[in-house]
Amino acid sequence: MRAASGPARWRRGWPVRPVSQRSPCYAAHQETPQAVGLSGDGGVVEVLVSPDGDWTMLVSYPKRPTCVVAAGPAWEMQQLAGEPA
Image (tube, rainbow, N blue to C red; front, side, top):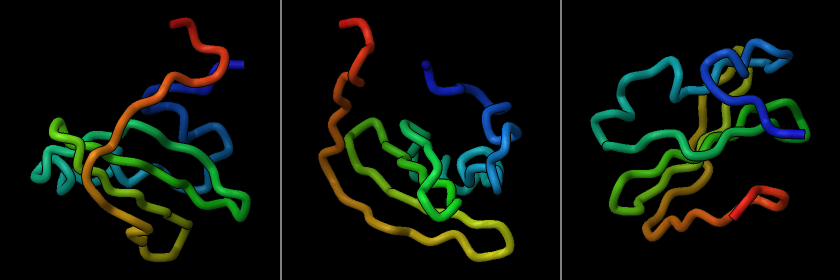
């Protein structure tokens, strides 16, 4: 099963719209969403990455502030299991 993609994905049972889809402030850092998923406790986890490899990981919950979980340099994309080479 392939993960949902595009702006509509948050509507299918996601507790909150991903930050990258509701806040233009991340454009100032040239970071764009590269990964998004649901945590075990119902949060939306996002990884935003800049063209030079700097990255920020966020977690969002309904009616709570969005938190920066981690950030750093040298993000590297890996092939997902089951994806064609």
